[in-house]
Length: 110
Image (cartoon, rainbow, N blue to C red; front, side):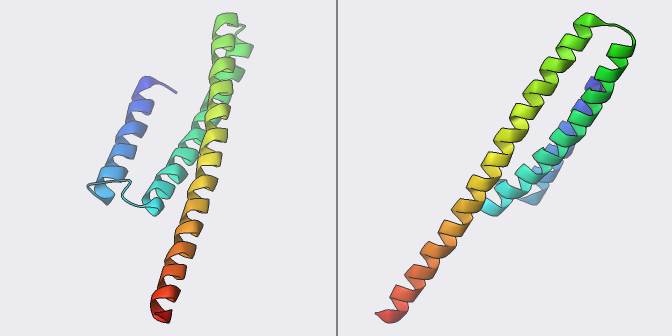
């Protein structure tokens, strides 16, 4: 992947996020949508870096191989953090629903 492709992905993210609302994270759902986009982009990037790694191995470019292995490691760490963040957002959404349901029920009982 070259810098132009990375820049295009960033522009795509910015367009999607700013196009949705003026405040992209004004709700848990919008944050979840962003995490889905981020996760998809990480997956695409991992595939690109893995291909670059194969090419570097074929060309015996030791320094490049090491750099790409580090990039893969960091991308996989990021993937794990995003997965955890998605689960946390899902838990928060569930808790919010429970809390609003309880408030509605207690208001109806009063």
